Each structure stands twice: as structure tokens, then as C-alpha cells.
Image 1 (cartoon, rainbow, N blue to C red):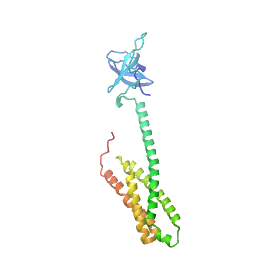
Image 2 (tube, rainbow, N blue to C red):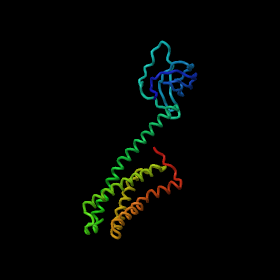
Image 3 (cartoon, helix red, strand yellow):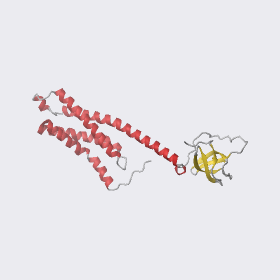
Image 4 (tube, rainbow, N blue to C red):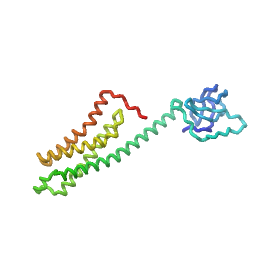
Length: 237
């Protein structure tokens, strides 16, 4: 638990003025407000700074001092925190990071599926499968629905693959996920049109995959090279 101004505890060691105190079951480095305090004395937290907690002995039989900032968190440097406090802070940070990544995946997946479906519809509008429709091999509405569905699945898969890859990088490249997604879908649409023109719908599907792989691999390829060359890690603010 965090320490607040006004919390009471006891000295674990003599303080002259540095020493250790016990607060809420944990031992903390602290210093007195200038006076010597024997071990086992009741104390109260009166302040905190970059050097640690500042405590004052409570005189037996006298009321505690009136502290104007009582109840405020006693913020100290991280190297003064106990092992339990550091572990709790680490768990909180990890939980926040997991929550952030979950939100990114959730909304990114929706965007990926939506852009993929839109790319599929536009590809049909630009001529994908027209020869098959004119030959009577497939209905236009079925073609449109099928390609839109495949595009949505492709967009979803691309986002998950790219985002997971970029999360594993030393530097923070997550903001590039949507850029890579758009490049991949452009490559897939272009490849589908070229493949369909020369080899039909099957050729279009194969070339869509190759196009998505070619354009989508550009930025991850650069990231991989940077990681392999040992680019120093980005220091987060």
C-alpha cells in the first residue's frame, strides 16, 4: 500500500537522522526531521522528498502535529521503494500495457476487417471477375459478397500478423501497423486484378497473396534490418 503524509508507524532502528521505520507492515528507509529517535518509538510521516520519507517522533501523551497536507501521498524516489512496492508497481504497469494492447488489437482488428472488405468491393468494381460474370459462371452479387468477405478475412489476418510482429520489436513501431495494412491491401488488390486478367479468379487469388506479401513486407523488412543491426532501444518518456 502507498504511504501518505500523516501515516503512523515505529522506528525499526535508531535514527540519527537516517534509519529504518516500519509502516503498514513494510520497512522503509527514512530520516528524522533533525532529531535523534530511538528504535521502537512511534513516529508519524511529515513529508517526503527525493531522498526518502521524513518522520517525526510522536511524544507520548501529546496530540499528533497538525499537518496541512495530511492524507496526501508521500512520493519518494523509486530506489527507496520496498520490494513489495516495486512488484506492485510492476504488476500495475504490466496490466495497463496488456489492457492497451487488447484495445489496440480490438479496434485494429475491426479497422483491418473493414478496410479489407472495402478493398475487396473496390477490386470487384475495378473489374475483378468480370469475365466470369459475363460468361455466366458466377453471379455478380455472389462475386461481390465473396470477395468482400475474403478481403475482410485477409485484412484481419494482416493486421494481427503485422501488429504482433511489431509488438515484439525493441523500438515502438506499433503506429506503423495501419500503414503496413493499407500497403498490403493495395498490393493484394493490384495483384488480384493482374492475376485475374491473365489467369482467372484462381490466378487473381494467388497474385493477391503475392501482392499483399510484397508490399506488406517492406516496412517489417526495414524493422527487421534495424533490429538485426543492433539499433539502440528507444527510451520511452
